Figure 1: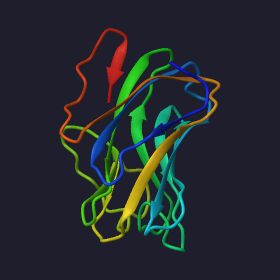
Figure 2: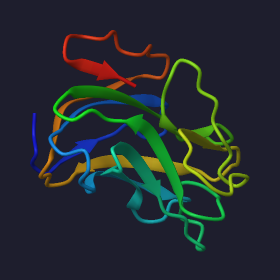
Figure 3: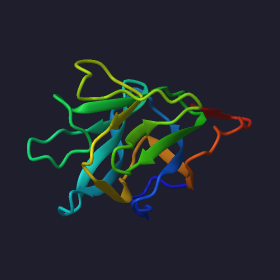
Length: 174
């Protein structure tokens, strides 16, 4: 369990589920929690997505760049929302990461994933997004940032077919 900064190496060119357990002591405060680093088309590593606590939700904000080094091909920055978080309760969230060409998918996992194409999504937040192209992105690591109102309790790397976590006392899953 930490509020301190750290780094977690992630699998390259593999599909996986990243399970995060978080506790927020102030859900109304906007705070950056972690950055997902990777590379597009063999370029140098750069932040591809940032996980925020914002507006009572956990959100991945994925910036879009004209130079083609973005996680998604989209007209505007892509925001992926997990849903509401509860103050002073541990909650567990799953993120699906699929970097494989023509199958690329990133966002909040569930049993019934219905990803959106961010190139066709004009407005509003989405849960999980895909890019069906050969644009090969590669994930390298997750950087945990220094936190003030959020605690990160557990981080797990799991196989792609992982089922949602069975609810434990004082743990909510999304």
